[in-house]
Amino acid sequence: MRIRSVSVVDVARRATVPDQVVEWDGDRITAVGPDDGSPPAAGDVDGRGLFALPGLIDCHVHVTSLSADEWADSGHPASYVAAHAVRTLGETVRRGFTTVRDAGGADAGLTRALDECVLPGPRLATCGKALSQTGGHADLRPRGRELWDPHPDVPGIGRVVDGPDAVRLAVREQVRRGATFVKLMLSGGITSPTDRLDGVQFSDAEVTAAVEEADRLGVYCAGHAYTGAAVSRAVALGVRTIEHGNLIGPADAELMAAAGTFLVPTLSAYAVLAERGEEFGLPADRLGKLAEVVDRGADAVRAAAAAGVAIALGTDLLGPMADQQNREFALRAAVQGSWEVLESATLTGAELLGRPGRLGVLAPGAAADLLLCRADPGADVRVLAAPERALALVVSRGRVVRDDR
Image (cartoon, rainbow, N blue to C red; front, side, top):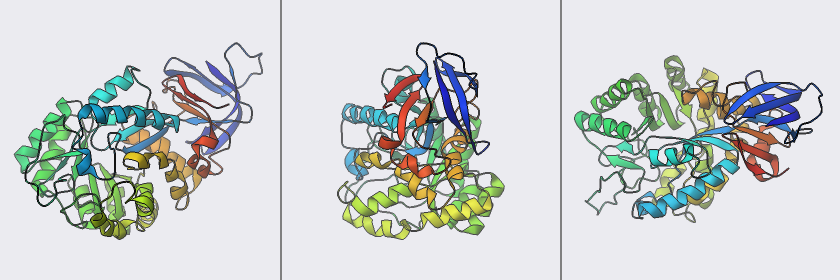
């Protein structure tokens, strides 16, 4: 199949190239180059007036989340949660996100079903359960609740582990179940009921155990962290990606850049929670935590960009908030230029996932994940904030999943 006479948005070159042909066979792009003007063949897509770009990558989602109250989510049957995840995954790919990285809750079963095309959706990287210390960000028990069900099939974003040996075992278990990275809760969070937002979580020995074990197993550690203290410690101990990072400053960003640590900011999560958090199930006692970070994320992105940190795109929208996923483009555009934001959502995301040249590009040999847009996102990336208007075609794994031409 091929698209004729289309303008290709070349993110690596930061240029939009007119009158191109993009061709693919199955799940591989076979050719990208000038249109030779030959007569169209049966099945060709007319790309005149449209802009082709790689499928988008969201490096921080929670596809099994049902609401902003993550403790309540853990009480649902796994089959019910999976059914909602199927709907979420289908809606995600139709918004143009052809690859996502789940930061806690989804497992390799969903990845396998997607890879086998049992259900429609993006490519899915998972960590299984995020790891938390007792009383940490993934310990969602209210203060009056003592019992915790560690069973891997119980829905929820995380599991509680304490001590280096327990952390090592947990990392091994997550990878055995199919995790392609390990998520560590390294500071307090908004949705957790019993920790402080500025708290530094896990001991150095526990973090080191996780990083060493992950490295031995061929995966990496991602760290949920807000404060400069939590981030700088994570960087020093070998954590590869920082999730959120709202409270970092220039010095923290310099450390990240020097170590090659990725930042995955999630600006849309705070914007949506500030507007509609209670409606979406965020308990009232968490709103005070939200106020501490809601206006700080943009400054953190500026500091990271100035230091040369590799910045991916993430959203972290829980449950029904996920329909605001593309809002991240408008929020990031207020901080960075259009090409920088596109790079976050394509090239940098692919690098973070360890798949450069395969994802996030339109080039021979790359995955056949691509979008046709009605306006040039290289000129103004904010067009992607409204996918219902912007996207004319979405191709995932070589299959058309949305056609609004």
